[in-house]
Length: 176
Image: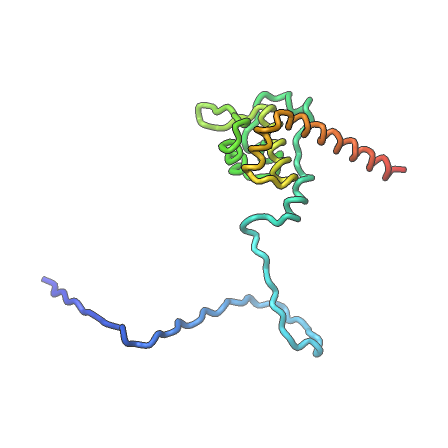
């Protein structure tokens, strides 16, 4: 039979002790020759890749949207969420969020629960992407815009065709 003893400690009147600081592990690197005139050491701040993208990064990604032309887009009846996310260079979770928030997005779901987007859904995602990423609308602002402006899709299509014309003219000018 084991004897169990219990001890009670009261540390209330001891001064606070600081924990020892952890030292960073530094890998061996090649020596760098620094001129004698440089005496102050500057810290190099490494930017974290987590969190929201900066506005510059988002604006750079706008031109990278790769939605095919209507003739090619409407050749297939359904697109997987992975393909749609790849077209817009966004995460699949963002597409799912937009599906939950916007009433105009209603993808079909198969027996497994996979989302299958029709070409009309992709056009609606393109409109939502335009409002939220290019025009910088908030989620509620984009919802209100779509709800109040029944011709929002027509306006968007007109803007897109004007952008194509502008691109053609700029290319034509560059070739002169």
